[in-house]
Image 1 (cartoon, rainbow, N blue to C red):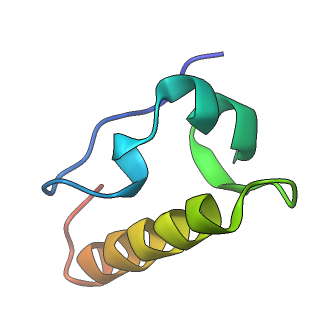
Image 2 (spheres, rainbow, N blue to C red; image 1 turned 90 degrees about the vertical axis):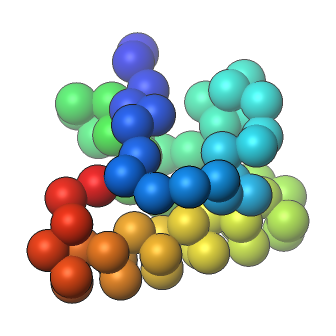
Length: 66
């Protein structure tokens, strides 16, 4: 499974996690894009993902494709 790591903005706490943890705790769609996190993910991982998701949503509202 591929992991979409392309971002249109700077550093994110979420992307500082090792790729192995991202693969372990994230939920992916059929294209390999992250669509959420698993219930079993640690609280700090979930928090980092939520911050990432909110920022991504803000940029998409501005018309920036991320």
